[in-house]
Structure formats: structure tokens, C-alpha cells
Image 1 (cartoon, rainbow, N blue to C red):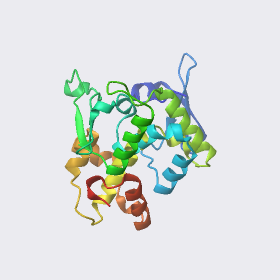
Image 2 (cartoon, rainbow, N blue to C red):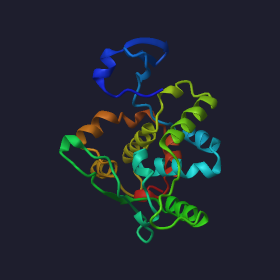
Image 3 (cartoon, one colour):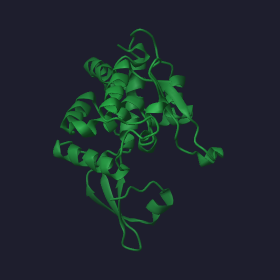
Length: 234
């Protein structure tokens, strides 16, 4: 079912709880919508690893891109080989969200570092599939990726699978980076860098990312294994 994000729409709905954490709304025209109570659900590393391994290998690259970049799905689906700087392990998101509230007519490009491990996987994927510089990396529809995510999580027995959307992968990326700030490695990652990477302002960053204390040291080690040596985290 389509997800409602407009508060005015939610107010017009007659909401009926169908399971813990999930509601279904019916509009006047009879259209049904799902409304999640918990919109800030993050993946724990074990949950992500189990999910990722359950995906067919030819479908894994789009999810690999989402968890390693924190890109919105629309941004990731517009990535092209020419957007990578292989020498510096940088990626530029050329197509980004247009923020009307900031009077933007075109989304601002974002460039940031990626791990050498992720860069190597993307380069192999591009070469194996003979993708030209001007072609998009992922020939798949947003709805198909979304369905894959939800169906796999449900099949894996994630109790609150309905709380996940593709945007939760983006939130997971930001939350993991925030968590790793608090752990001394080769250096600390400034919150300004995370905001720039995700295209957030500080208010949004503070509002949507919870305390890193929910994760254990073992969780943090697994996060680093997934995110690789980005920002020298290895």
C-alpha cells in the first residue's frame, strides 16, 4: 500500500490498528493507505547482513549502493559510471532531491568519499555488465526495489517488517556513521560531514538520529565491516 507522508491526508483518514505499530487508513473515496507509527526504524548490522545475503546476487548492487552512500532511492537510480572518481574514491550524486522550501529549482549536487571496498565492487559491476559512462547503473524501478525489501524482511521473520521502507536504509547509513563517531578509530567523523553527505541540515540531523548507545561494540565492528574503510574507519 502507498505510504502517506502528508499530515492533512492522515487527519482525513479513519484509522484502524491492524497490528502493533501499523495502521490502515481509508480515505473518503475508499482508497486504503498504510501509516507507520515508527518511521525511524534502523537496521542492526545482523539484520542487514541477513537481509543482504537473502537477495539474489544480481540484485544486491542497488542495496549495496544504498547502504554505502545513504543516497535516496531516486538519487541512487540516477547514478552513472561517470559520477565516480576512481582515483580518489569519490562519488557525485548529480540528481538529488529538489527542496522547494529552500526555493530550489534544481537539486544540489553532492560529492563525498566512498570506501575502497565499495568502489572496487562498483567498478567490477560496471565492467561485468559493460555499462557505458552515460548509462544508469541500475535498470530497475523504485517500486520493484521496495517490494524486494519488504518481501524479504517479512520472509526473514523481522517482526516489524512493515516499519521498513527504502528510506530506512538511508537512515541506517546516517545512524551507523553517527554511531561510529563515538568510537575512537583513526579519527573522528564530524557531524558536519554526515549532514553534507546526506544533504541534511543540522536540525534534521538532530531530529531523526537517535542515541548510538543502542548499539554494542560488536555491532560497531560489524558496521565497519559493511561500510569498509570510508573515512578511515577500518
